[in-house]
Image (cartoon, rainbow, N blue to C red; front, top):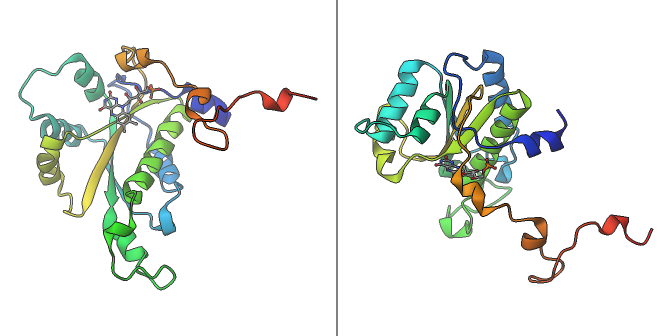
Length: 212
Ligand SMILES: Cc1cc2nc3c(=O)[nH]c(=O)nc-3n(C[C@H](O)[C@H](O)[C@H](O)COP(=O)(O)O)c2cc1C
């Protein structure tokens, strides 16, 4: 598939065919593409927790939801995913990398990081997995681990203290799902978000066809 088609076709899919596992070679490919993501200083401060076995996925859902209430439609849909990849960021990998001689930030001062690149880079890796799923004819969704369930999730899967769950990529063959109500907001088009030369100066598309 052309990259432009993959990008345009990508949308968050929140319901899957529970009886169709993700082929092992696709799981491999998702991870092979994830590690192609760019990273500051090539720190590659990410880890991916791959949950394929039903008992592992059950543990994920129990630990992140508390398992008490009947799941709503949204949750039931996501719970049908045969594959979950939890994307973890590793801040220390960046502080360590930038303390190396070619970078020289030996104080490991976090004030040097106005943007948490460990989370940014892990998010980029997640996006590559979302796009790979589309390219392979599958659906995927990115969602978070709720703040009040982080401790239970960490405990359940033995996540080290210095790793942070940035989000989860669910993957599977698509089943019919409900459009997210958020989409009613409409997409912000380039003219609305792009600025030409100075902030606030309009950017216009279609200039390449002008004056020729
Ligand atoms: C950082 C991030 C967190 C998100 N969290 C959730 C989530 O918790 N639940 C969910 O259903 N969708 C989640 N989404 C998906 C967004 O709702 C979705 O990307 C947005 O509505 C645009 O739809 P589209 O991706 O299908 O184009 C998240 C997306 C991002 C980038």
